[in-house]
Image (cartoon, rainbow, N blue to C red; front, side):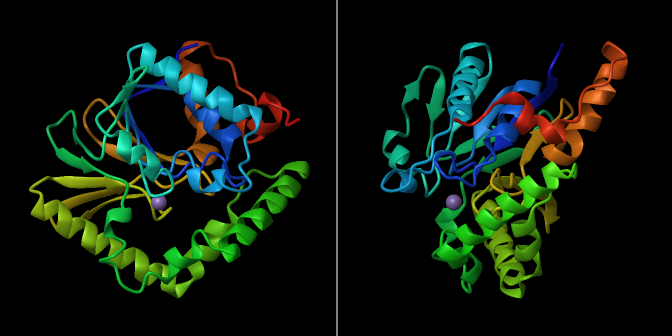
Amino acid sequence: MQPLHYRAIFLSDIHLGTRGAQGAFLLDFLTHTSSKYLYLVGDILDLWKMKNGWYWPRVNNEIVRLVFDKAQNGTRVIYVPGNHDDLLRDLAGSEFNGIHIQQEAIHETADGKKMLVLHGDEFDSIVKHNRWLAVVGSGAYEALLVANRWFNSLRRRWGFPYWSLSAYVKHRVKNAVQFISSFERVVTLEATRRRVDGLICGHIHKATVEKVGEVLYANSGDWVESCTALVEDDAGDLRILRWVDESAHLLDQRDVYETHRRRPNLARADERQWHPQ
Ligand SMILES: [Mn+2]
C-alpha cells in the first residue's frame, strides 16, 4: 500500500526519552507517510532527560530505525537540534547514515518561497513575559502530561479518541496566549531581517501556519500533546496535519482510490502496534 506522499515533512518537539512522547502515534505517522525532505526541527531526543529518568520503550527504537531507513531510501533528512538536544549542535555540519545535522536550514518550497528553519529557542532571551516557557519543562508541566496520559488511557478504554488535556489547559492560560503572540512577532522580525519569505520552527508546542504581515510563519507543533506535523504539498503549500484527528480520514480517502477497503480506527494505533514491556 502506498504511503501518503508529501514534498516535505517537518516534525519538532517529539521529546523521545520522556514519558510524554507519543511514540506510537509518531510511528504510525512515519509508517504511513513519505516525503522528499524530512526536517527534524529540534527537541527530537530529550537529552536533558538522559541524566535522570530516561524512558525508552521499544517503539522508540522502531522510530529511530524508520528514520534511518528513510534517509537510506531517498528521503533527505535534516536534523536541526533544539534546546533539549543541544548537545547535537556541536555536531552541526556532520552527517550520520544520511541524517544531516545543521544549526539551521533554508528550505525552498516548490513555488520558490525561501523558509528559514530553526528550532526557536534562539528567541528565548528576546521574548519577554515567557512565563509559559517556564511552565514547559517544570514540574507542573510534567504533572499535566501525566494527567494527560491517564486521561487518555481512560478515554481509550471507553472507546473515545485521543484528546489533549494539557493542550486544552495551555490555550486557556492567558499568559501562554500572550507569550505565543510575542514569540510569533519576534520570529517574523527575524524572518524580515534575514530576508526570507518565512520561518519554520517548533519549540512552543503550538502548531500553526499563518501570515504575519508579509512573513509566512509556520510552527510544526509537537508530539507530546498535539501530534502535529507541518507538511508541504507538491504545489508548495504548507499546512498542519493533526495526525490523531485526520489520519483515519486521510488513509480512508487514499484507500477509496486504491483498494476500496476501510482501515481500522487509527485512534487505537498505539494499542495495536506495540505492547510496552
Ligand atoms: Mn524547545
